[in-house]
Length: 345
Image 1 (cartoon, rainbow, N blue to C red):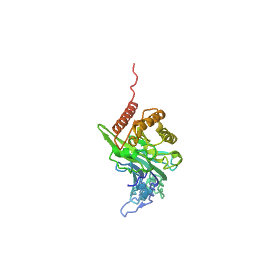
Image 2: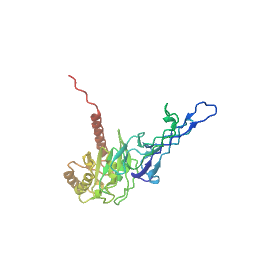
Image 3: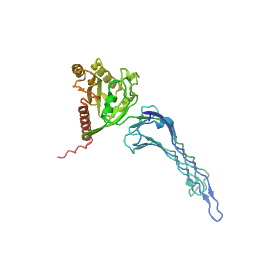
Image 4: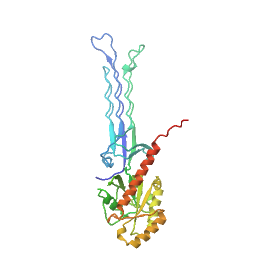
């Protein structure tokens, strides 16, 4: 299945049906009168979050969604049928923006959530609605109200507990494949990963969702390489695992490049808890690994893990540290959401 995380969609709710002008003229009815029914209501356009989707690929093949029109009213006080609603089914983590791609209309994170995007037009009143004691034969009815049309943007941000960041070819996909059942593409050239991947990690009593995004290079926020458009998929994470290639010439510089791109993206990514690891330590000798670990520690302000996803060096330790940070984050959220007891003398 192809991965698509952004789509532009045109939606239109249904027009309301027109009211009817009609009079009773049955043979044995002594007193006739107006009996025009009201028009039916136009259909609405909804967005619904469902749990069996993980991409917006369906919206590549259909970009126009129009709800049904309300039927016109008829004689004998018959009201027109309402128009059929249209529902856009989106995966969890989908944000809906207005046409300017900046105004947030809805953020659907839990399966079953629904939001009304465009309300259908009301049906017009038939002439029976206007009958009064002084105006017993009205000969006018209201037309149905028009529906609403608009263009919206759908933007998917994957929901994961932890995210992998780093330069291209830092070993992020190899790490994801080693700790989960995910099978991302792995090769010995940069930009092997072209779209985000998710994996479920389970170790002892710890389980969490890990997200791998394409690598960042210097100038990614200006469109260099694949750019930073996939950074949105780690905005919802609770902790970041920053992998630095131990076979690189200057690990401190590699770390600075990625941190600068995270800061330029400006979505609070630099404020998230970060675990730094020197990856691919199986490809260098112990002396070289210790020297580069010291350089990286001086830059990031913490002692980086010596990691190798291929040999399994410190993989469990990295997962336990990620699980610990996720647990602390959940505890902080629970304490902040807990109502404070009111003061009593």
